[in-house]
Amino acid sequence: MGYVARRSAADKAETHERIIERASRAFREYGTGVGIGEVMKELGLTHGGFYRHFESKDDLLVDAIARSLEEVTERFDKIAEAAAPGKQLEAIITAYLSAEHLRHPETWCALATLAPDIGRQPAAVRKRVDSALQRYMVRMAKYMPGATEDERRRNFVILFSGMSGAMALTRACGDKDMRERVLSTTRDYYLSTFTGPRHRPAHQSRE
Image (cartoon, rainbow, N blue to C red):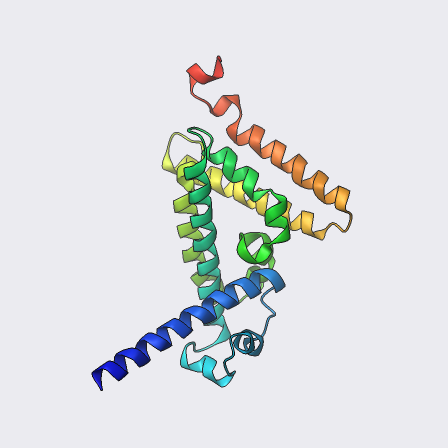
C-alpha cells in the first residue's frame, strides 16, 4: 500500500507539473483567454480532473506566469554564461530583441505577451504575480549596470519594461520590414544605452 500511495502521489505531482508547463506556453502564445478545457484536452486529461490540482484558473495562471519567468531567467543565465567576459548584458539584449523571440512567444518572456492581460486581473492575482516578478528582477539585476543593487534593479525595470514593450509593438506590426526596423532600432538603442562606453571600466573605454 505504501508503494501504491507513493506512486499515486508521484503521478499526481507529475501531472500537476505538466499542466503548469502546458498552460505556461499556451498563455504566452495565445493570452490568458485560453480555457482550462483546452489545456487539459491537449494533455489528454479531463476538464474535471483540473480541480484535483488547482482550486481555480487564477491559481493556474499565477503558477504558469511564475514558471514562464523562471524559464526565461534560466535561458538568460545560459546566454550570459556563453558570452565573452563583459558581454553578458549585450548578449541578453541581443537575444531578447531577436527574431527568435519574435517567432516563439510561447518559450520566451511572459512580460512581452501577457503584461496587458495581467494588468486586467483582480488585485489579488496581480499581488501574487508580483512575487514572481520580484524574483525575476532580483536574478536579472546582476547583469545590469549600476554601482549599487538598488541602481541595478532600477536599470532592470527601465530596460526590461522597454524591451518587452518593443517586442509587443513588433508583434503588432503586420509589415515584415516594419517589424525588422522596430527590432533593430530598439536593439541598437538599448545596446548603446546600457552597454555603451559609459558603462565600461575606464581602461576599456580608452581602447
